[in-house]
Image (cartoon, helix red, strand yellow):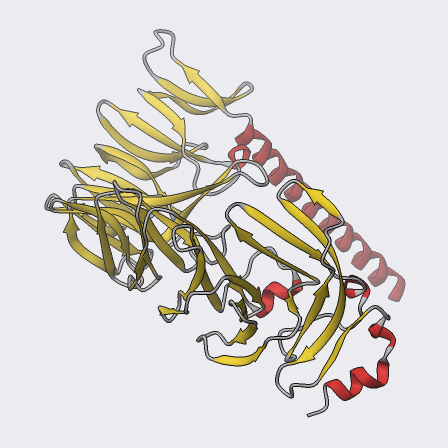
Length: 437
């Protein structure tokens, strides 16, 4: 009896196994057929259907059929826009009608939401032909991954993908802001919150997150805190017809205006940047400006709009600022409060010191620092300093290189190891003492 039961159980398991194999093959065959679907015309070539090999799935009944991709890979799509007379609908490759042939136009909007046109107005439906957004808009424009532009009553506004109105109709024109990157091949990214906008006679930049509109007569540029991510915070600037610059922070607050004879650059700091991540959100953003006319440098804390004094040279040390003036050098915090000042030696940043002055960079090579196991860290209050030799040892493309002896300073306790020709790195007891409060 046990043997009979065992054999029957074995036969049942074999049957189930074969059924699973058949079902799997059927699914594979269906995908293959969907991928191999081709247009099938009637003898007069006036109507079109679909077939795969010798098997007909849709008899030639439509005036036009073309694939509609709804996020799936192109080889796996099963959706086709069908046109009959002057109206459109949506069918599957097997001929199932998902959306009746009743709309003036249809196209993909987002995910599996379809944009349709009826009586010269646009709306949204799902694959069950249920209304998602009523047809009462002059235009619906999709390009980013969380917001879209709508036009109603001749004016443009914004909605998110939950169809909540973010901006009521107010702009005469509204376009997505895109940014192109060329460092690792051509690519273009569209911002979710920044738009080119025109309101009345004024044109400029609109930020929907911060709800501000910067109107300018010149093209306005965005500088991202993460240069590969236009959805990160931005600093805005433009140049007027007299080549003077105007800068705004990510809240639309005016940072300042400059004369025409300047160079500028941005410096970003974030704890994540220390791990060499490609993408990180800056916790501190600085705008460095070199004024050629006055031969000085100054910086803005972009987040707080604070401005530093004028200095002859400025370096960045994580979230701290190291400056040089006519008598010495010092260290500032992110809000430009003085932490340390001295007239001895020279400051070093990342093992080197460099600065831009009338187009020349002077470069000081500091021994040992690259091999030093006490790498400068943002959470430790110390910097290297050095004593340069007077004679440059090498002329290079942008300036001169100098040898220097190195030391290290704890600017919190004011303890230091002065610059010396000897390898101070191996002075371990002194290093321990240096960081004792």
